[in-house]
Length: 187
Image 1 (cartoon, rainbow, N blue to C red):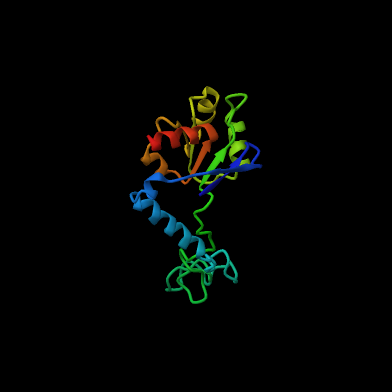
Image 2 (cartoon, one colour; image 1 turned 90 degrees about the horizontal axis):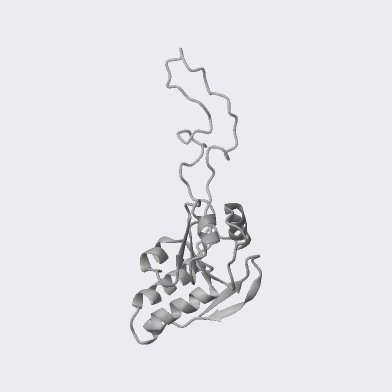
């Protein structure tokens, strides 16, 4: 399996070959299961769509006044309770793909401990959702820049555990941290 390598500007810097020794020797069926789930999820179109109250054609005026008619109060013709109204919690187009969740950076160095600079790096890499950043050793600027972001966690390759990996939507490794983790898994 190959993972893309990028720089902090989001530009491609090549690929890294990854091997799974646990799967190759017959163990690690969960990794095989995850691969199949990712493949089948990527096959889904994700184009189902319904209109909610804000998207249905119609006026915003009240059907009748609030009091005095003897009928139940009503606020809009577009209410989901009415025929032709919007759909509550209906499907919206989305991407079911699970690829691109692991990214390898050639290097992650911040000049200063500014959260703004770190957010700019995450935006360049197009990381949405929760992210786990794995570095080879503790970088004080990176720790200070990321500690104010609830959706980002920074750890080292020595202390990475399964719970952190499964809890995060995206995994961001530096090349050195990735090599450190591979050496740890082969021992």
